[in-house]
Structure formats: structure tokens, C-alpha cells
Amino acid sequence: MTAARNRAAARRGRGRHLNLDEAVVLLTGATGGLGTDLARELHRHGVRTALVGRSQERLTALAAELGGPDRALALQGNVAELAQLEGVAARAADHFGRIDVVIAGAGTDTADTLEDIDPQAFERDIDTNLTAVWRTFRATLPYVRRTRGHLVAVSSLAAFVHSPMQSSYAASKAGVVALCDSLRLELAGSGVTVGSVHPTFFDTPMQATLRENAALTAAWGGYRGVFTPVERGQVVKEIVRSINRRARTTVVPRRYGFAALAPGLLQRLLEAGPLRPHVKGNPHA
Image (cartoon, rainbow, N blue to C red; front, side, top):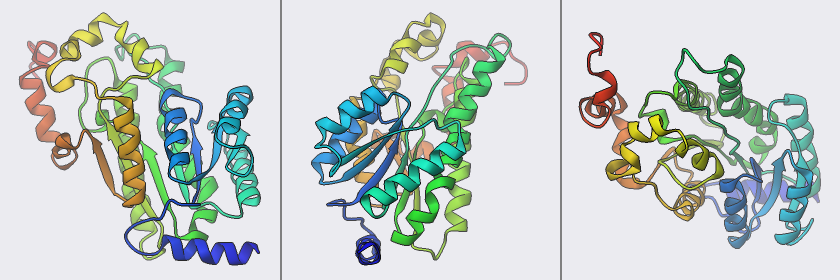
């Protein structure tokens, strides 16, 4: 039965588009603001979901909401531990018979200057936002190879646009792009596709915390103009769309897609405009 399911999954994964109906998706960061809404949207598309996070209580409640074990499986796991993710992937594949899509969605951010940031916080941001993506893909790739599925990392527009007081976040999110680019080349011809998603500001508990930082809010122009946040629902829908299309790079909103094509140029333009107060007087800017 498992072999037959894998053959069916491989047929599902062929071609440019990926059929989400009855697909099996493993999602890390499932109990976060974005992760929970994303799990619900995937459920509406007929997806069966392996929900991964650190809070068993919240995972169990979300899995029950999405229909219980036949449709959603609660899997407690820490993205900081490769062995735990390997165990989670094995349990998900055993339970559902396969894994078609993996979404590395865990993330964190500490807003502070390079000189003042707590070293442990800096390292935690890099680990959660970048190294955990590697762990997630490493643990699940053997299963995704069998179904010729899709790997997607939730990055940020900060991968292309870098602000003050976000050195750990910007570096980690830019690293995700490089990781995905390298892995995509390694998997060429395998049928497995790799994508990254880069939303601008949107409403999450993490974003609410960042808004309490007056200096960072000022750097982003009070979150007005080009820095106006988008609705979380828009980000969710774009992630689902990117999976269906096996997209390489998805920027939310789409009108900022040029940022992925010419990040260096955009950075210079922002430093000459909205971010100018932070580079004025720096002879090396």
C-alpha cells in the first residue's frame, strides 16, 4: 500500500504545478501566528498536514480543529535539534504514507544594534532562521525525493532589503536565499523543487514586539509608504500559491518582486531615501 501511495504521489508531483488535494505537507513553526493560519488554509485546499512545533498542547488543539489524525498530525519537535526533526519526519511519513511538501516556517527576530545585541540572541536568530531551515530540509529530503515534491523556506523581504538594528535577522534571511539556490542546483533533475517566500511586514506576535522598538519603527518610516504592512491572509495565500506553482522565489506583495532581482540597487535607493538618516555622516556609505 505504501509503495502504491508513493507512486501516486510521484505522479502528483510531476509537471510544473503541484496538486495540493490530499497532498501531505510537513510544516514547522505550525503554532506561530503565520503557521496556524497557513495550516488552516492548507486544510481548505484538501491538504493533510504534519504540524511541527514546541507546544504539544497548542499542536494538539490545532490538529483537532483541522480534523484529527486522518487530516492533521501533531508532532512536537524542536527545529534546533536535527535528531528530533529526523524523528518527526519519520513519524509523519509513517502516519500518512509519504511527504509531498515541506515548509520551513519557524522564525525569530531580535532588534538591536550589532554592538548591543545579546550574543546568545544573535546566535539564536541565525540558528532558528537559517540553520533550522537546513535541518528541516536535511531531515525531510529523503521522503520528498520519493514523491518528487517541493521544499519551501519562509524567508523575508529582509533577505534583499537590510535595515539597521536587524543584522542577525537580515543575515539569516539572506542566507536562506543562498541555501535554497545551492540546494536547487544539487537537486536538478531529481524532480524535487525548492522555493523561498519573502513577505514584507505583516501582523504577527513577533512583529508586534518589534513595533515596540521606537528606533526601528522610525527607521522604517513608521511603517508607512513603501513599508506599509500587508494582511497576514495575503501572505498565507501567496505561500499556498507558491507551492501549487512550485515557485522559485515569491515576494509579498508581488509589486516588490523587483527586490529579488536587483537587491543591491534597491538597498542603495533606500539608503539614499527612507534610510538616509542612518547612513548620513558615514564616509563609507
